[in-house]
Each structure stands twice: as structure tokens, then as C-alpha cells.
Image (cartoon, rainbow, N blue to C red; front, side, top):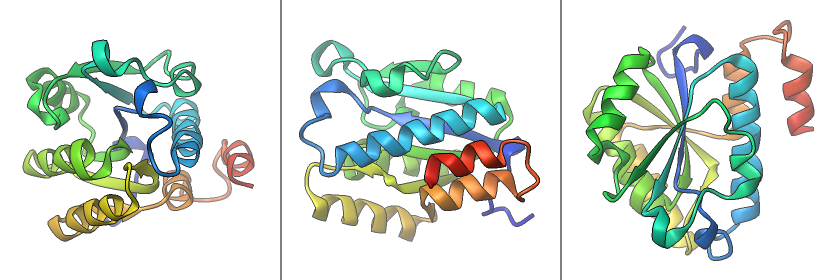
Length: 183
């Protein structure tokens, strides 16, 4: 399998800072939240590790409840640096999983997501940026962030592409469940 095609056995889902205070100010936040939930459900079914972060939770609040209710098995990290990779425990945890492909969703695309993706690249991970599960307050910032990450070597993907790559074929035991998420 090509290294830029997701492999459920080599993948980890990373949810960056989808927190309550951002909920009503992010462009298209409903879609970001909805698609993140679909990613989490799929990861849970396929036993793909899930990691989520919160930027300064005392001030910005917790992860939005709609997502958090699906994160029972997820690993949590809080942070003060914009990049998740600024937390040495975060990087150590990622390396300990043995997973190389990091499925990335979250906010804000041009700040925390961008800096995290660059940190992942620097640490020899292959970030797969799910463009319909990332957001910024301003659409131009969203687009600039995606373009910069693409230019730096991140794999640009979308929800459906990600889900179908993880399943590989229609005989996958969760094919019908996952198909229901997108139809």
C-alpha cells in the first residue's frame, strides 16, 4: 500500500482544540464538529487510537460536548503551546503507539493545526489533514493554512476519502456502519 493511503493498522486520530469558546466563532463549525464525530466513531469501531487536545482549557473551555461524549477511550493532553508537538509527553505518546499516519482534524487551521502538522512532519509522522474537519474564524485563514501544510508535505484529504481508505474494501466488517455515517 502506498504510504499516503491510510492503513487502519498504522493510523491514529488527532483532534486539536475543538473547544466550547470556539464553537460559535469558527467558520462552518457545525460541519467541523459533525465530521469530527464521524471520524471518532470510525476510529472507535476500527480500534484506531484517538488523541485529543485542549488549548488552555481554563480560559477556552473543554472540548465541545457533542464530540467529548464519544471520547471514552481517547488519550487527552492539555497544552499552552500552539503546536501539540510542543508537549514532550504528547510526542512520546505518539511514538509509543508505533503509528506513523496521523489523521488530523481541529481548529484553528492556520494556527494550532498548522503548527502541529509541521511538528508532526519534523518528527517523521505522515499527517493526513482532513480539510472538511478543520476550521478557522476566517475562510481565507483556513485556505492559507491548508495550502501551507500541503506545500510542506502534509497529505490533504477529506472525510470520505479517509474513511474509505481506512476500510480498504466493501467487505470490511464495518463497511455498512461507516457508509451510513456519510449517506
